[in-house]
Length: 91
Image 1 (tube, rainbow, N blue to C red):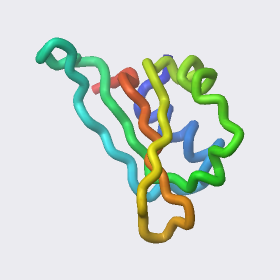
Image 2: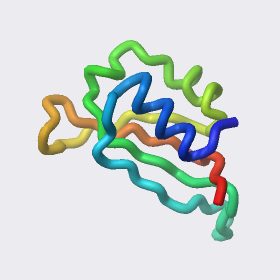
Image 3: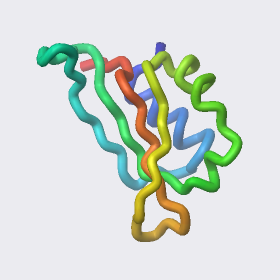
């Protein structure tokens, strides 16, 4: 199971090189905060993730789910958000 800093390094080395925007949000279950989990989102180019198996990536990271959401982002031809749900968080 990787934590948030290890996931940033993994995504930047494997898929992007330099990540401009990385977002962290708290996780909630039944209106209570999960203290050791965070949701992560990266702004990425969809061309880098054309043949990626997201189920295998989620198992490698140890998170619950990985999704790719299309969005209009400046500086990207095919901009997307790569969202990782319930990534382990070290304080």
